Amino acid sequence: MLDPAFAGQLDAVLAADDAQRTSRYPGSRAGRQPVHTVYVPADRFGEQTVDDWRVDALAAVDEHGPLPDVDADLQARVRAKLEDEPIEDLRIDFEDGYGVRDDDAEDEAARAAGGALARMAHPAFVGIRMKSLEGPTRRRSVRTLELFLESLLGAGPLPPGFRFTLPKVTSVRQVEAMVEICAALESAYSLPTLGFEIQIETPQAIVGADGAALVAPMLHVAAGRCAGLHYGTYDYSASLGIAAAFQSMEHPAADHAKAVMQVAAAGTGVPVCDGSTNVLPVGTRESVRDAWTLHARLVRRSLERGFYQGWDLHPAQLPTRYAATFGFYRDSAAASAARLRAYLARAESGVLDEPATARALAGFLLRGIQCGALEGEDIQTASGVDTAALSALIG
Image (cartoon, rainbow, N blue to C red; front, side, top):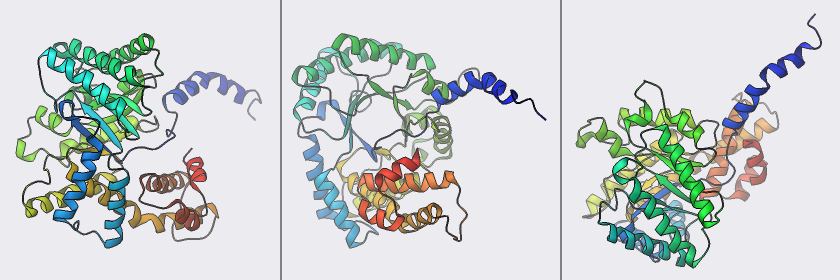
C-alpha cells in the first residue's frame, strides 16, 4: 500500500509545473471573436469608412446578386447583417496597404486617422496595423503609434476592443519589445492594458535559425497581451519563393504555417486568424460572381479547419464573408444542438461524445449566435441550454 502522504508529495513536486501550465494555458478567452478583420489603408480611412463599406457592399449585392448558392432566407440574413454591422473588426493600415511615405505625410495621416476614429461610431473591434519593428521601420512605427494615440485620446477615450497589429515578426525579442512599447504608452498616456496581434508572415516566425518553432515562445512572452495570431498569405508565400500564380490561402505551405499557429495557440485563449484572397469581386458581373464563389469557398474552407476569422480587403467581399459564415453555422446547428442535448441528458444516441466534444459543440453554437448566424432562443429550444450555459460549458 502506498504511503498516505505520497499524494501530498506529488502535489508538492508538481506544484510549480501546475502553476506554470495554468498560467500559459488558461483556456478559452471569454467574449466574442470577430469573424473577420477589414484592412483599410490609413490614407483612405475616415469617419465615414464603415458607412461607405456598408453602402458599397449592399450595392454590389443589388447589382450582381443574388449571391451564388445562397437561399432566399440566407440572402435576407446577410443583407440585414450588412445594414446593421457591415464590419466587425477594422484595422487602419499603416503598413503594406499604406506603403512608404515621407515622414510629414505619415505624421499627417496618423493624426488624421486618430481623430477620425474618435469621431466615428466604431465597430466592436478596432485598431491599427503599425510598421514592423525591423531596423529600417522601427522608429517610424513607434512615432506613428504615438501620434495616432495623441490625436485619438485628444478627442475621446480609447475604444473598447482596441489593439495594435505587429507585422512581419521575425524574432521572439520583437514581441518582447512590443510588450515594452505597450507598457511605455500606458504609462505616458494613463491607458488601460494595451493588447496586440502578432502577424505571422515570415518563415523566421515559424522556424528560427536554430530550428526551433517560435510561435509558441512569441505567445508566451507577450505576457497576456496577445489578442490574436494573424496569418499573412502573400508575404509568407513570397518569402518561400512560391510563384505569384500559386500563392493562396490553400497552398500546402500556408496550411503548414497555420497548423503551427493553431497548435501553438491551443489552450492559450489566443484566437488564430486566417489571411486573405487577393482576387477581388470587381469588374464585370461574371468577374464579380467568380470572385464571390472563390471567396465563399475559401471562407468555408477556413471555418471547417477551425479558423473562425479571416481578412477582407474590399467591400464586395463582405456579402460572401457573411453568407459563407452563416451557412457554415446554420448547416450544422440542428445536429450540433441535438448532440449537445443528448450529451447533457446522458441519453442514448448514435454518437458517443466526450466532454471535449461537448465543449466543441457549445463553442460552435455560441460562435454562431455571436456572429448573427443563429438565434439564441432557437438554440436554447433545440439544445436545452442558453448562451450563459454554453459559455460555462466551454470553460
